[in-house]
Amino acid sequence: VPIPLDDDIKWGEIFGATITVYPASPGGKRETYLNCCTSEVGQQYTVDNEARRTLSMFAVKKVEE
Image 1 (cartoon, rainbow, N blue to C red):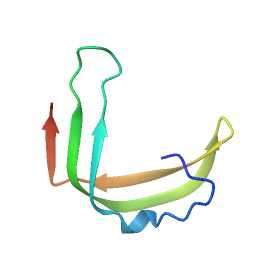
Image 2: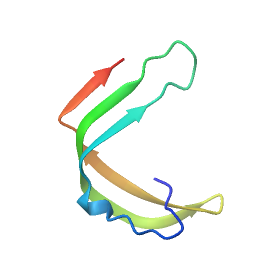
Image 3: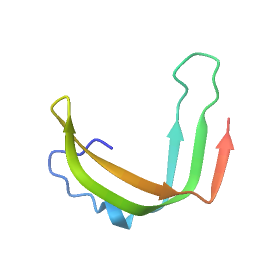
Image 4: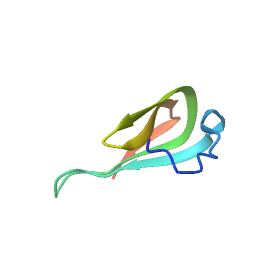
């Protein structure tokens, strides 16, 4: 995930989130993950001068739209 400048998000406390992944090309299906929770928070690193962090999460349900 990209990290906001103030980085006040408590990454390890994400509970019940909804994450939607949009297709890279037209005609693809969206994937939505429901009731997501963080299971692991990685260290901060930089890619192309942008701060990032790796998150591992699990979801209760996956829906293809």
